[in-house]
Image (cartoon, rainbow, N blue to C red):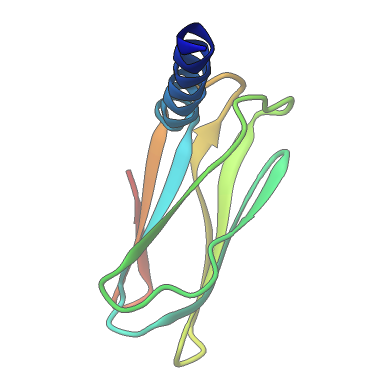
Length: 117
């Protein structure tokens, strides 16, 4: 019986470790809202995915992870709408296949400025 409990605990620990390790491996995009108004809608299109960040409060951020498998190369195409109906559209960065642990941060500033790092 003790052996069965040890095996079960080992499996649970292994699965938990793999789950959290996936966040280190998968690429991610973070949108930071420094616009001075609430972001009501934030979306990013990459060649094989559409990411919807929803609304983002003033001074807050939201991060989404996306698949390593990207059959097409391309750019991050963003669309951000803030509370006063100002829309930010544009492209930045570059997406390719199997970019392990890639981190992209898109920051929305006042004055319709967007920076990508």
